Every structure is written in structure tokens, then in C-alpha cells.
Amino acid sequence: MIGVLALQGAFIEHMDMLRRLGVASVALRQKSDLDRAFDGIILPGGESTAIAKLLHDLGMFLPLQERFRQGLPVFGTCAGMILLARQIENEPAAHLGTMDICVTRNAYGRQLGSFASYGDFADKKNIQMPFIRAPFIKQADENVEILAVVEGNRVAARQGNKLVTAFHPELTEDTSIHEYFLNIIASQTN
Ligand code: GLN
Image (cartoon, rainbow, N blue to C red; front, side, top):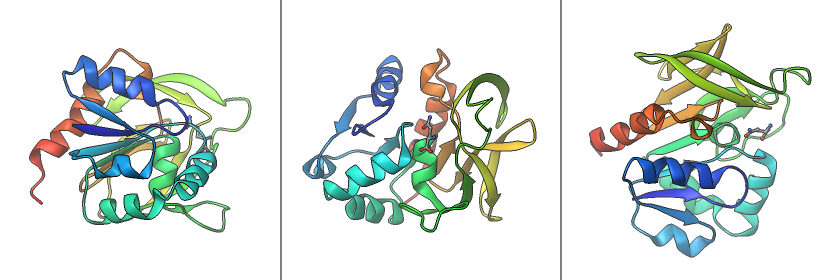
């Protein structure tokens, strides 16, 4: 079972994607939902500052951070990637800060706020990648594996049980990136 953070943003689409893959999911809306037994968590896209504020207000921030530090698999898309980053460019503080990347928010400027692209992801060719006021990965430590680069920008990465994409695979028909996350869960050793 996968927990999908359901405070704000594109969480329904992730749950639909998991349903199509035959995987049960649970919407995480309040602190007590974190007591459910799940194997991984998806942090959806949306507005990272709004999601972070809600996480704090609902008392979910520290328990979630602790679970990720302990190695619970997590997949962050767009705002979810920003929430996981250790550093956010031009901002004084990070949020959960559990992944060794620095991200740039709204990295493509106003003109290119939202656009559709195609790119390779790990060994998968020509994956549809919708970007919506998206970040990119400005810097990554050596232990972070870059999985996708679009027009010179790093837009997907993995560090152990943590997977992030700057784009929104849940808004496409292609289930392969969610399957990649499920494989991380299936192959984990801890
Ligand atoms: N621009 C948003 C942020 O900074 C992210 C956009 C998204 O998740 N699609 O949080």
C-alpha cells in the first residue's frame, strides 16, 4: 500500500495511476493517517510552501521527516521534489531536507511556466514529461543518480529509496515512472 499526501495539489491523479497499476493507496490527510501501514509515500505536485505550511499545521511534518530519514521509500513530483531537497536556491531554508539535492523553484521563467516535453528516463526512451511551473535540480551530491536531463537541465533523480521528478508523470497515460518507484520499494533491502 502506498500513502499519497493529500493536502493540496495533484494527489488524485497519483492515486488513479496506482489504481491502474493494481496498487492500493491511502490518502494522507492528517497525522493519524501516518500510522497506517504503507510501503512508500508519494508527495505530489502543487505549491511547496502551501504543502509545507499544512504539514506543520497538521503536525505531520516531523513524523514524515523521521520516516524518510529512516528510509521509507518516497517519490516526490515537482513540489514534492522541492519539499525533499536539502537546499532551495535563493531561499533561506529547506523543508524536509532529506535528499542531497539543491533545487531551483520556478526554474523555467514565466514565459515557459508550463510546457510538455519528451525525454529519456533511466533506460526508458521518450517519456512524456509535463512541466508545470517546475523546478530543476541545480546541484546534486555524488550519491544522487541523475535519471533524466531535458535540455541540459536535470529533472529526475534517485538517491537510495528516494525518487524525484520535476515533471508530472501522473498527468500522462504512461505508468512507467510509477512502476520504477514500485520497483524501488520491491527491491529495497532495509
Ligand atoms: N512552483 C511550485 C512550487 O514552487 C511547484 C509546481 C508544481 O508542483 N507543479 O512549489
